[in-house]
Picture: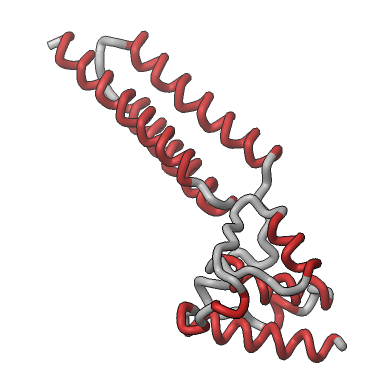
Amino acid sequence: MKNYKSVFIGIIIFTCSFAIGFSGYMLSNKQEKVILKRELEVHMTNMETINSQTDAVKSIAVETVQETVETINNTDANSEEIYILPASSNRALTKDELADLTAWELKLARNEIYARHGRQFKTKELQDYFNQQSWYQGTIEADHFDEGSLSAIEKVNIALLKEEMEEHQ
């Protein structure tokens, strides 16, 4: 029975380690890191509740998860992803959310939606800004960008941001 429990805990440690490594590779923004932290905390809680006689193995597994969470926390502080409006591709924005943004931030937020789709920019200032973002993969020339690749939510948000930009001028 003791060997069975050790194998079970070993499998959990391997699965967590693989999930942590793979998830870390796939992280693209701060929100995903928050989700990963929550998942790791759930795994840690689950491992802590395993009732077995192999306390030493459990202790190592818990330490590994805690160290991983700490590493992710340090990564957040040192290499923060910058999005003006992180949810602008997922839900409709409100005027209240945009009220405190400057004209430049509104312009960046609007073009951030295009940038997420790989659009390149004609103006040097926008291209330079997005080239500095770790998530940006500019692969489509501005003249070849297909507006049809935008979701309905993104189109609504682009219109709202444009309207707000015009009000700031």
